[in-house]
Amino acid sequence: MLDYTNFPAINATLNGTSAVLIVTGRGLIKRGRIAAHRACMIAAVVCSSLFLVSYIYYHAHAGVIRFQGQGLVRPVYFSILITHTILAAIIVPLVIITLARAWRGTFDRHRAIARWTFPVWLYVSITGVVIYVLLYHLYAAGSLVNFVAPK
Image 1 (cartoon, rainbow, N blue to C red):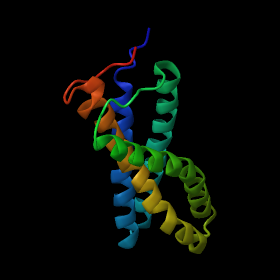
Image 2 (cartoon, one colour):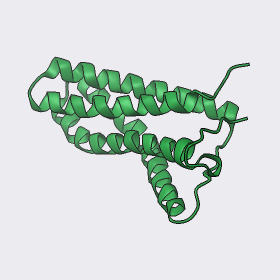
Image 3 (tube, rainbow, N blue to C red):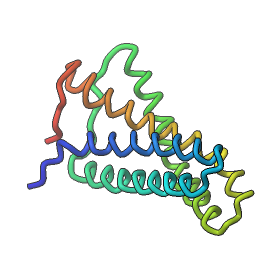
């Protein structure tokens, strides 16, 4: 039987790596380094795609992991989770369209949508890591330090 306990950390790492690559890629294109920008953004798409596959696989086997935090952190967590989930659904087609426009060489249209894709994708990647920390480290099973493995 496969041990699923490492999947949340892997998923958070993929999200965090995507965030770093997205910011780096944006910085590179601002400096006119087109080939390096392209490589960073393709790597970000690969990381995000691997995250999505890993996330779906993990939750198909581990089920729903319930947030244990109480008090003020609870509405904060769910506010982050709700916005993250909605924007995560929106970002998939945005990334595909942005990537397709770059692939086709329609860079004026690519830039126009990338202005929207960048902040949404970055938010989803960063909040994915925040959700992981809150769910699996700070408030796992009512503890402030324990990691709780799904059954």
